[in-house]
Image 1 (cartoon, rainbow, N blue to C red):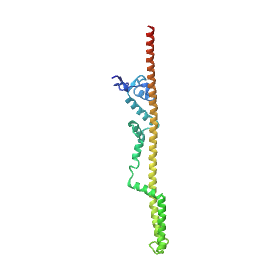
Image 2 (cartoon, helix red, strand yellow):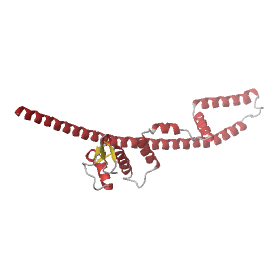
Image 3 (cartoon, rainbow, N blue to C red):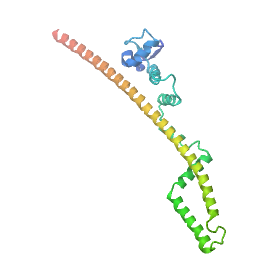
Image 4 (tube, rainbow, N blue to C red):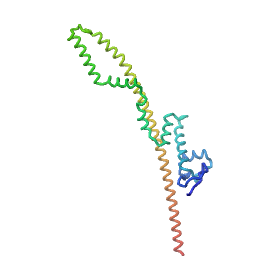
Length: 231
């Protein structure tokens, strides 16, 4: 099996993993040059070493405007390195850590802001007033002006308002999490597009090298045929 020596590690690797310096892209080549000043375009490295420098290159892109990687940006890099998706993780974590009180607050806010609640509450008021005014002729458990009913309504309003505020705060937290997740997905898409451009450039360079090599072989064959015909 044919092998080659890596210009970075100095170890022997199969020829199928060989990548020339002129094929890795300018930005990654400069990054390798910082660690290995003697590295040249004609030197070769392995695919695994190239991937390692690609990860470093992506980290440098993220560190361009900030001093250290945030938790979300580190998660994006890990996702790129492992080849996993972020959307599945987002769907799995959505609503996973909600407490019982938070779920109750969401249900109360959802029911309190619906036509079902409005119509049922109007029906309750009408029934209460009808029973006390027309059935018991204002001599029942809550005669006119319905002081007990006013007390119940005040208690419901006093309890319902903070519960709805709790749900709104929860919704704001969810919106912030969705914004973070959208940022992570967009960031990963941008980095993958950059990597895709570099890979396409690498493939183009490899194809050009293959075409040049084929042309050389064809020229050598033509020269050999011409020499044979002269003889």
